[in-house]
Amino acid sequence: MVVLPVVKLGTLLLKTVCKRVANRLKKEAGLHPKFRQFIINVAQVNHRFTTQMQRRIYGHATDVAIRPLNEEKAVQAAADLLGELFVFTVAGAAIIFEVQRSSRSEARKEDQRRQELEAMKQRDEDLARELELLEHKLEELEQLAKGRGLAGIFHFLPNHGPEAGKAKST
Image 1 (cartoon, helix red, strand yellow):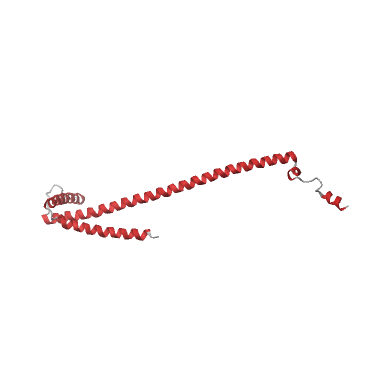
Image 2 (cartoon, rainbow, N blue to C red):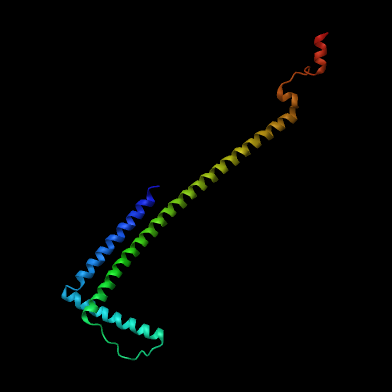
């Protein structure tokens, strides 16, 4: 089957392209002044949030002041976050696409099974009607046989018995 190698190759290609685009986003993120300030703010909020969560998990005091990241670390952290977000978004979209494709494939298979079942039911009904017709014809033949007798159905002559052989030989 050719589909599996093509899917694997497509996945590998997607992964490679995503990494390159993510690295490019990381590189370009810090160059545009307005975007740079935006990602610095995002990085600072993320830093405060993760630090508070770590302090709660480890049971440390949470009411202490958290020092902000310096500008370069904030840009680097936000760029990394942006790159990972891009990769996960593309991976999520690929998973959603695959689930939908698989769902459509299963729906087609189910429809085909349903059609086969309907065809089998129709054939069963046809055979039942034919059987009923044959039973009716058999009943008619049995009634005819009872009325005429067995010899009447097969149009036997009365002299076909063992005595008939003796009459011919004399």
